[in-house]
Picture 1: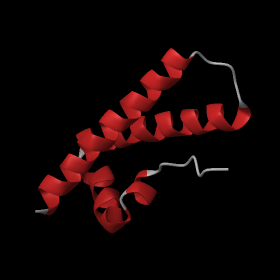
Picture 2: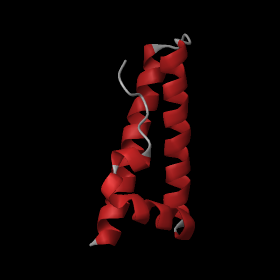
Picture 3: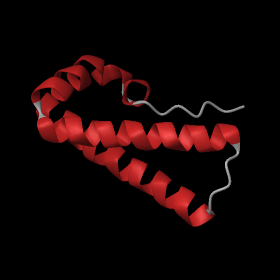
Picture 4: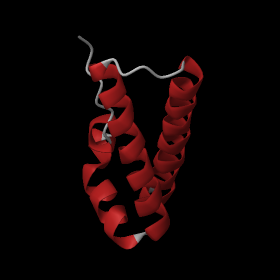
Length: 81
C-alpha cells in the first residue's frame, strides 16, 4: 500500500528546522500548516478506512491540501533566501 502521509516534514525534509521555527514565529504560516495537517490527517483517514465520500469532496480536499503545500513552500523558500 502506498504511503498516504504527506506531512510537511516528510514533504520538505530539507526545511525541517525552518518549518519548526516558522510554526512558532509566524502566525500565518502556523495557521496554514495547521490546516494542511488537519486536511492531510482527514485524507489519510478516509483513504485507510474506505469511508464513503463523494469523489468531488475528496478531490476538493486534495486540491486544497496541494494549494496549502504550495503556499507553505513559497513561504519557506522566500524566507530561506
